[in-house]
Image (cartoon, rainbow, N blue to C red):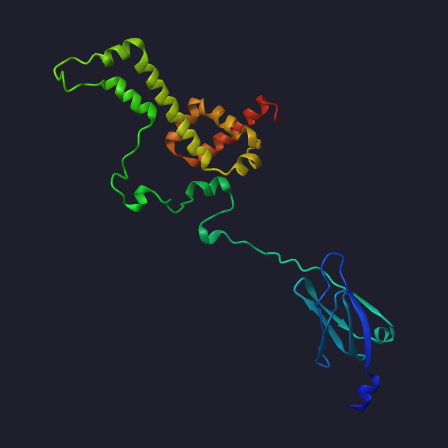
Length: 249
């Protein structure tokens, strides 16, 4: 015990790091089982002797082990550089969820929970589709209006609407509305980042690109198949033409 006390020395040093705070780093002498911590500037002092081992540790740094040699004992001041600790995931597993990592493949089989809707809540008439304004106007133009005062009168409104072209115009409007609704459904199924990264369509051009697809009859036929993989392949090929025609290459 007397020999150990005579050879022990209180060394002084500083923990340094270019990026992280060096306050409160723990320094433990695992040989003598004593410890200390750094001050606001990373300074510390601890009693050691040759052959001891110091462990420097903190949540923001990688654990560092420093054996005490005679050179360290003879140094008036030591400096200990610390390496920043970065918590990196070695591996991300997507297989338990049936995913492959390929967006084009996963999007076709991905099943999400139902949204809160009338159907999910079991409300009456939940399965009844609400018609659009254009469809309602078309119904009114085709069926006409009957009054209680003249139940046997001939309703000529459908005839007039057919002659004037109003019925045809409303049919075209219903068709356009249906196309637009289908296009928006496809657009909303992908995040904007997918259009920007994979299709290379700028944020402000996404709506215009989808209209470019909407007017193509081939796109409407693909939508009716509900084959998400074929739709994605179409969007990939169509985006190349759109970028070329709009000088986005």
